[in-house]
Length: 106
Image 1 (cartoon, rainbow, N blue to C red):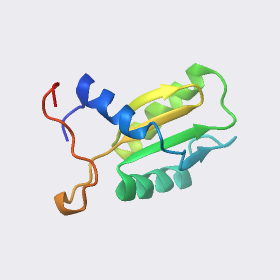
Image 2: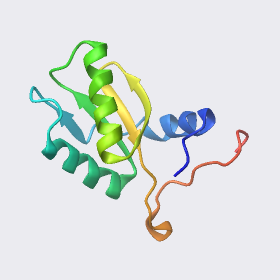
Image 3: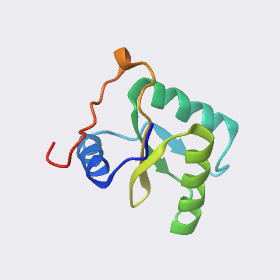
């Protein structure tokens, strides 16, 4: 998947707005079970909200977001407060739930 463009991230943030967090990051931070949960959630939903329960400093959240992006091969769509939104397009075109716009007017 190509890197998301600004208008695509904006579109995905709009789609994600009514969603509730599916994955929660607790005091242990990044673990293999977190990576597995993210992988499963992204396979099923494509667009996933993650709530950082025990991480209040932005730098700590940004470090965790970077680890999640690298290990699960997804992209951050946004970070608002203690909730980050991630996207990874389903590899099987038949199972895709979200059609990304290809143009800004889209």
